[in-house]
Image (cartoon, rainbow, N blue to C red; front, side):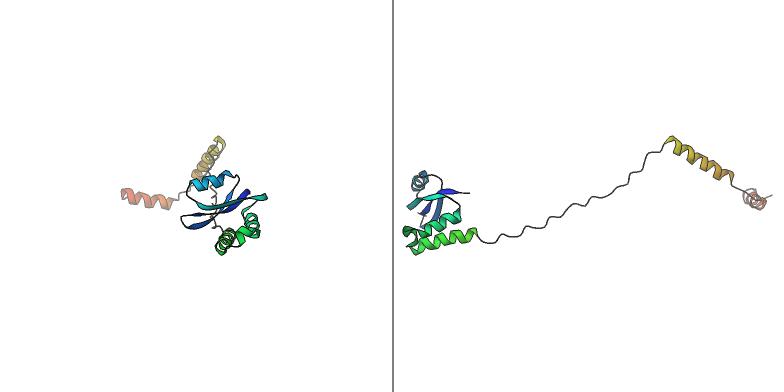
Length: 139
């Protein structure tokens, strides 16, 4: 974001660096309880780092150690390294096989195979005799 005004103010004993796009911000800060409001227009629209560098070059801001430290801290906070993003698990799509519906041709073919298998059954005489003995007790 870019700003056209920058400066400092003191709120409840804490020195704060302020950025704005209007002179009305200084009046608003004073109304909200800030003291020692010192907001100046920037030579052009600047981001926070550029505005702080400009303020450090001005006599009114660079003279006081507390103001200089607050300005440098504002830039240091904004340039600290960004944490790496957490790895996100990706969804693995599962392949599902869907059984096709039977067609009339496949049903007919299955029935023909069953009839052919039934016709191929061969029973020997010895098997018939053993079944008769098991069921009736005689041949």
